[in-house]
Amino acid sequence: MGPLAGLTRLDFSKGHQVVKIEVLGTRCQRCDQLYANALTAAADFDHSLEIEVQKIGDVNYFMTKGVFMTPGLVIAGKVISVGKVLAVEEIKAKIQEQL
Image 1: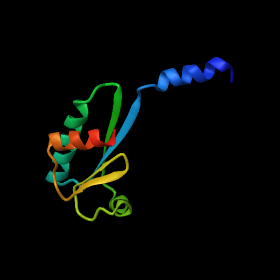
Image 2: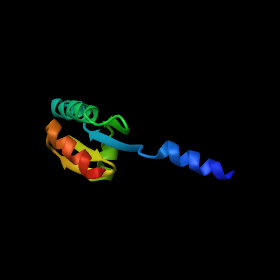
Image 3: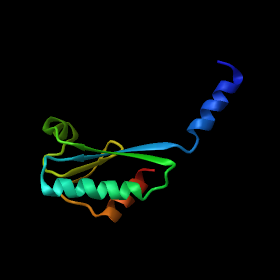
Image 4: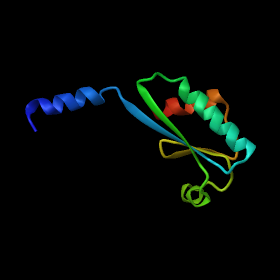
């Protein structure tokens, strides 16, 4: 790698951050609502921040995270809430805390 290769890589990654949000739940109404709220919250952030929202229904995965009541919300690998539907503004605040 030449001396400019490192600079190019830094330029492309500067200011770009990826935050992964997981909504843990089976096909229940509360799980669907938390997923919708998470999507809305993610859409409100600046586009330089990439937010990936994923709905996960694998009960075995829930257990590995210590989530035994749904819905569960995981942001950047941390369990944020269990058994409740957070409002859009609450989710936005939790995302902000992870930045």
